[in-house]
Image (cartoon, rainbow, N blue to C red; front, side, top):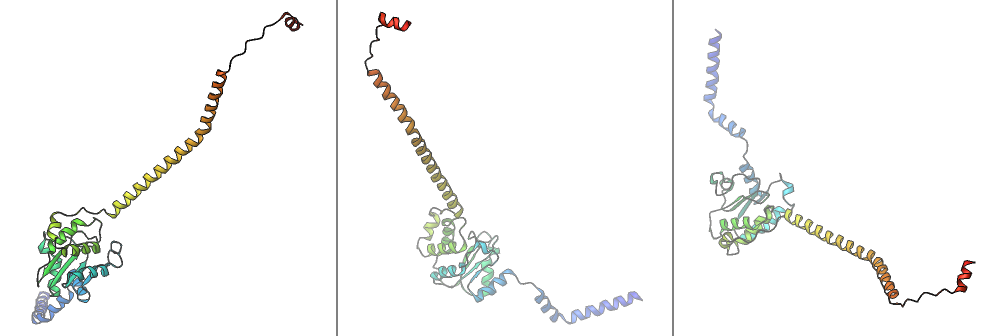
Length: 250
């Protein structure tokens, strides 16, 4: 009896699910969580420069404004996403966040994805004329910026190189990498230590010189006095007479 009721109940549930497949699909779609690419693409529809708010210490308050001013010089539509990245770039084309953003936005232009620290990331151009040496400029900018340069600095250098007309040369023969902020701070501390050491030695030497002047004066005076005494003629000793001898005996 109980087994018969179980079979009947299972049949009814199956019939309901099979009879309403169109309603079940939207429910699954609504339950699907929004991906990171979807969230960033939605932000780029409102503003072509997206800057993450998860790393405020790594980015200055005016990061978005500085990036907009830099990419505006390219003269083409540019979409920038400053967000933590992992495994991006030419080595992992299947994991390209720039390609995912292009698929969501459906807009042609230059897409730049870069982490807040500025290192790594990727740049891609979809549609339109491809006259800018983006890949060479991006590689050269990575070589020519300090290790701790942020995203605004890297993007500004990238735009400078892309518009310089020598992106390929600067990629193959990059300029010396500037010192990082940490390196500059360490060099400044070393220079301050050297200056302090020179001042200490100067004070020590001056004090030693001043304290030694009286001693040198005394020694010089005694030497002069001794020399004068040596030059003076010695007087012969007085001869004793009998009279003086008697007085001495008394």
